[in-house]
Image (cartoon, rainbow, N blue to C red; front, side, top):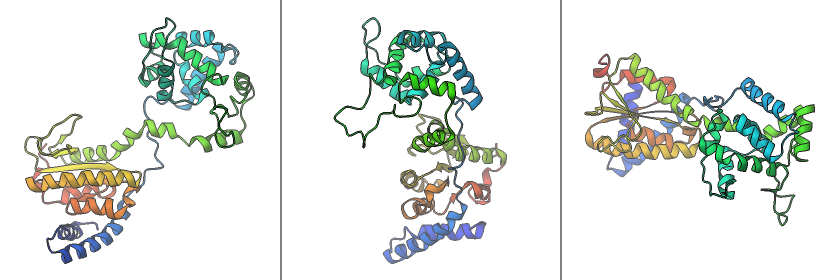
Length: 355
């Protein structure tokens, strides 16, 4: 469906799905479904791309932190609560290594701190994961300094199974502790042994199997991945010198709510709006299609052209996702692979070279 002729045919077909004559509408829906199926060839999956958040260390950076923790703890032999507290005060980045030993996320550590909730002076504590994240970057804030003794005790007691272990009434063949892994199976003795002798490749692969390959990296970088489409559209608009306004968090842009990602030529009097979406799964694609459909109701009434730039395998969900987006945009749905075709639209040509 490349080129202006195919685009115009798709636009007419999408328009026909809204025909008041039910027979015409239903026939158009079925034809549009087949067109949407054909359109999937333009979708590019991104599951193989790792969005590397700037706060995520690479292997060499992590090794530097790890080596320093090993040195300061004498191979994890100095790991009493007081010794771990001293370590965290003097070298806050150590929290990153201790966190991986227990296998807790930043949010879970913050929850554990809040659950116990009393500092060394007996005062209640409430923290968020940002305190842990700042420590990972080497920042010891006043709040972090206050929780250090408690955090050190939590690390110590998790590994020794004094805290957050599996309740006795639970069937151990069905439920397991997070400490049931090679480096913590026998408490700190296992940590010391693995640090000294290493781990087999089979054990490494098994941990990847149960933990998910690059799961935390992908979770942290989810926002970066969503930006793939948005940044591509922005580069396209800049290359074509098309005047535009890029939506900012908290924007209230008249009747078009939620605000689209780009407004052309400006936010004061937009004539064309572009909504971007990267959907790795069908559920996300379905929700985004609903959002675009709602946006289409307003833009149609205001006489504004709505364009969608979508991508990824989530839009292989056809009837209530990809097909819905194509219908809502009256055929003006594009992907990263045919993004340049936007410049061919009659609605866009007046704005080329205006920035």
